[in-house]
Length: 476
Image (tube, rainbow, N blue to C red):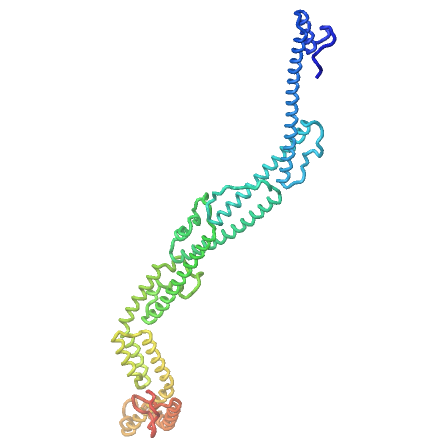
């Protein structure tokens, strides 16, 4: 800055009135007019010069501070731009000038639009990260079975497309896991509904005991719990219901067999069996496909159990009657075949056991049925011989008539129907002539029968053939 001291004079009219030189010239004129001393003038001019220097220094400092701030703002913008590029995983931005030229303000103005664009891209990318991570956390909470109350924290230092794709891949994976778990839950729910329907249970109550979110009418706002714990509980519940169904099936099967056996023993009518027909059908299958709703309820099982107990008591009261019927059947077979009554000692013992009440009715009836079968079998084996015996006896009757006719032939010839008596006599003579051959055949057949069975052929408690050495008795 130039000195305020003036060595020459300049006309005041040549200087602007607002300039320092004009004011200094005017001050000098005033001093000349008032006679200001020279040393005083020098002092005042020196003060004025110092004051001017201070004003200029402040202005320079202010300008320098502005320059520093512009440099700093430009550097910060550069650094922020670089950080945004790194955060988004990009190497460059089309909106950023390759070379910075011009004044500091021009350089700052040139980078600001690109910086704003990058910031908007970061905000959009951050929003994507938040959405993806929020969905991941929500599904993870469902899978883990915990409340969704954790705040989402996004690492803003890595908002690259690669990182976003990793999160999106994780989201797809966890969505598939959720879908698989939901399918598994639905499978368990279907099984529980089926078992509950068959056994007359309330499936909603069963599911609510596991977790309320499993109910179909659950609030849509409620997070579905598909955790390992819930899946394990559902699996345990299904196994328990399956075991219960199998136990009821086994019991129903056993009751059905008992019921069928009692029906057969007691000759129960179709009308009496009809109410339990479906129960019998269910008891014959071990699968669930044939089971209808309510077919395995406790009420149904108690109903058939009560019927079995009722019929069992009825069977006990009718056991003696049944025994007598089967014994009579054996007697009738023996009487018709002229056989001795077999197993009499055994049947007396059976009657004693029945009267005592300490008896397995099924075994006794089975024993009686075996006796009947053996008696029928022996009667069948005797049939050919018995037919010939009847023929021989008929021949004997004809022989006796012929003898009577021969003793009093005159009486028969003059009586009414004489020609009939004559014809019968002729027929009787033919039959009588065949008796020796019939007897010989009958004895041969009987001997063969005895040899095959190693036992004596009895007829009305008598030995049909006389033997010197009878067979060892093994039961008549």
